[in-house]
Picture 1 (cartoon, rainbow, N blue to C red):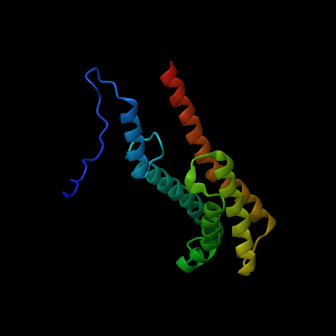
Picture 2: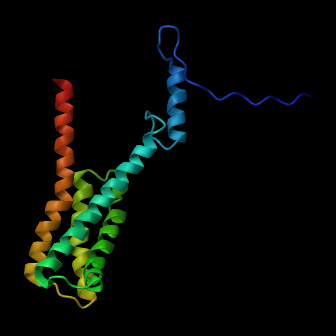
Picture 3: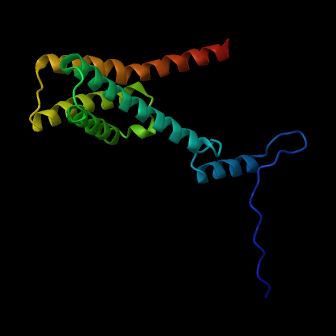
Amino acid sequence: MRPEAPQAPEVARPDARGAVSRDAERIGKRCAVRNGGSRGSPPWAGYAGVMRTGVAGLLDVCCVVVFVAIGRATHEGAASLTGYLGTVWPFLVALGAGWVLGRVWRRPEVLVPSGVVVWVTTLVGGMGLRALAGDGTALPFVVVATGFLALTLLGWRAGVRVAGTRKGLSRQG
């Protein structure tokens, strides 16, 4: 008995008119899923999703880092690096918790629920960790943190939404 030769991988090929058959569409979808994309997405879609998630995470971290930097510069001048790190860590930990609790990596640029979950978790968790660490959570600080974190963590997401809406409108026109 002769062993079977390995089969060539299925490839989606258009016919003479350039049309792709249903079988070819099915093959393309299966390849996309195998390569990290979702059904109906091209094979490189998984990479784009990772990039989108990474950029969103970096933007969120930058929002928190800038919030703490402005606050420390306003109140303590050129304070030490250890003082800065002592102030920023509770908010960064809470930010990470927000990403996990809200499973934000799935749709990080969405205002609701991703943005709201990240904002509330970063604010409440950051203040809670500060209190546990023996640092201050005075009412004016909470008010400023609420406003700044809402403006930045929700603001960039709102900007993405507006830009996406305008992009969609320009395609229609």
